[in-house]
Image 1 (cartoon, rainbow, N blue to C red):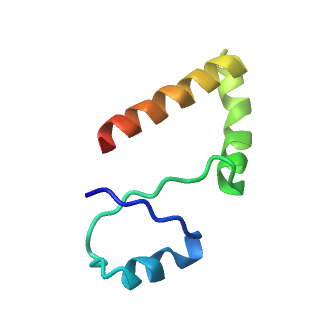
Image 2 (cartoon, helix red, strand yellow; image 1 turned 30 degrees about the horizontal axis):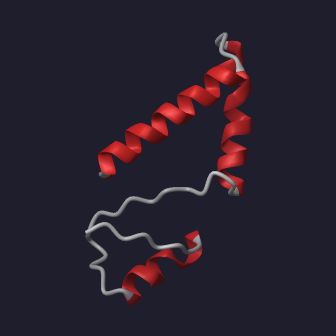
Length: 75
């Protein structure tokens, strides 16, 4: 059964423990795209992708495709 837990990175382990989830179990963590880490990673990668000849629209399409693939894996 898939569960969604909305918490901070700093509280993730504690939240898993509160729910009785064995800490050796595999979990998938999805970063909030509005979060600072995602924005920083995108800003760092953008010049490299643009230098490879891709546009902002191409980048957005790649992100959308990757999100769809991740969602399909979780289904």
